[in-house]
Length: 480
Image (cartoon, rainbow, N blue to C red; front, side):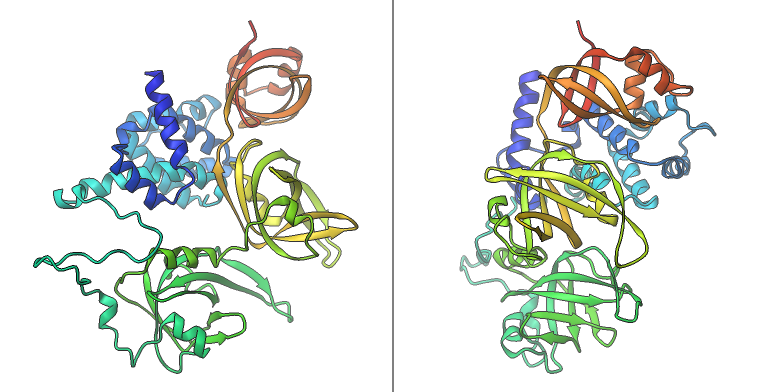
């Protein structure tokens, strides 16, 4: 059984770095099916526990109230015991599929759509969706392998007479006198009353900015493509944010165009409509996705750049600092700042996340491999660091390895009923660790209700055997 689990984990690790559509098709072709039966119950239960730990008291109460709607009984007081047992009870009442669907809906309701929660939840939601898709599809669809060629346009399907002539696609029905392709648009610099017909490949978060008159405005970006090329689109206002979806197809007219920037601007005067799907070459889709992000550089390269150059970096999280309120010079206000250190094979660098961007590290642990897109360099004397921007996006590439270690708990940095931050000695070094407070209370035989921290301090220093992932303690017991 353990060998089977290790093999499954190796298969999972091999495919984690690839786009989801390629992952699914290769799993199917290699016999690595992804039914819900393969999602281990304890894996989902542990993930639920980690998600619930990220909720503050108000969000947690709102979530429990959401669960009461489909008939889940809950006490009026959400005790520590109830919190600990909630993941197990949800699985018992609604099953694996039902509990995943329910938690997904609850996180949207709260809402908690930040990477810290969604990166934990998304793998299970993706598997659930794939399973339901197979169940709803007919035998012909279930047996047909997905195409995985990302190097160019898909090969034409054979007709019934055996010819390889390309099948008619919806895009061929567009009248060229009414439409301008992306390639033509880049050359001419304008639509001239014609339509731009595209697929939305990527959509940014909603961005808030201020005008010169201190008016607060909103905008967002799109990476779009047709059969000829890809281009970046800037949409002003937030009215269309919920109406434009990734993977859907739209027409635009009466747009503005910045030829030197190759950016299409959608304003309140722009007319937009939904349209039917058409084939977009995979390599063009990939190009559209890249439009949303600045180029990825090695950390050594970043250290040579001048001030305010837009970059993306990828590496292992070496250290995460504490949140600090910073007094801003330009405006009489304080803004939260969170620093962390990232390293790759060429060096290390400090990255500062500001304001709402500090939430990008939720769900990220020391030892995780992440990609941070759309940062700006900050040069002070001979030292280069990186600052977040309105367009920064963080993606977990690979989780930190799980290790079994012996450590000595020597201090408490901060503690509440959800989680506790500890100082621990390991391999003759002092490091900071995070552990779920219910797990800590159980191992020490304590209650979370009264004087938990004071009673915990009475037991410290405490030698322990632990299973850790990055700086997170997942399992804990007294050292033998």
